[in-house]
Image 1 (cartoon, rainbow, N blue to C red):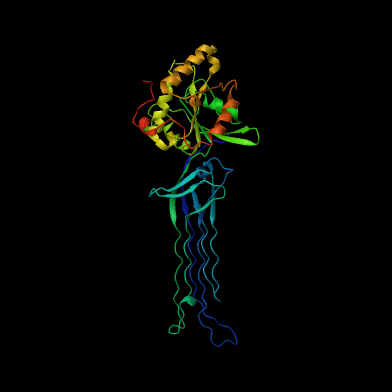
Image 2: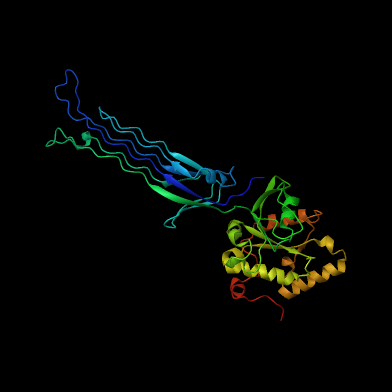
Length: 358
């Protein structure tokens, strides 16, 4: 599996324009030649192109310098020099391109084949033919080609996925990704086994597909830099819906309500827009709570505490046993048509309030 490199810094330099030419026409039987020096060619640009076949920025860490070709100088007979060759950089969809020094966003590459010029080549210089006039019939002026732009560029990859998997460490996100797709993220019985986002494609009937993004587990204070989640919260900003995975039988005996509220607060603290995305709540590891009455009581207390309606009730699954995963895929597909998850007002959560029963 390709290691995801989600940031890279590179240096780019566009090509220099070619110099203008000084030339005078000298041909047999042509008594009045005159100036015929052509203009220089333009320098090559540095261009980025969205490539759906790429999923990492690792190639840019191995080769951090890119230079476009210089324009050729003009020549006699009014010939313009050849333009310099462009440098075309293929980047994954979801790549943001910043000028490192100014912080300016230069391009947001989100579509297949999208082309953006991030460094412009210099214009070619003018040949002496350009300066001829009735009062200046033998000009010897010419201008040099202009230098191309050069920049230090910061590339930042934000995953583009339909579904973002969120939850505390060891909630079973990687196991779920394995269960619904062919992705093979690391799975172990200790926290923070996921150190980088992973993508997986789930196949549904009728040639339908869902792209899942498994995000490293979030902890309290993630929005302020705690744990591993801080660097990766930005990846779920582009997902369309969130699947909030909750461990139904945590080893530490934690409370599902507190686990849920902790993650919700971190999302709102990071971005209200992110936290208001449609959300599917899922209780995982139900096979570790074999008693149906006990499971029903956990769900009842959870729903009553947070005042959840019937449509918001958690879905019960076991990712390890692949029980309920197909129901989850269908629910995710259905949820993609919703613009906002009903019933959750961002202002209350942003202020640290919870939807507790009176």
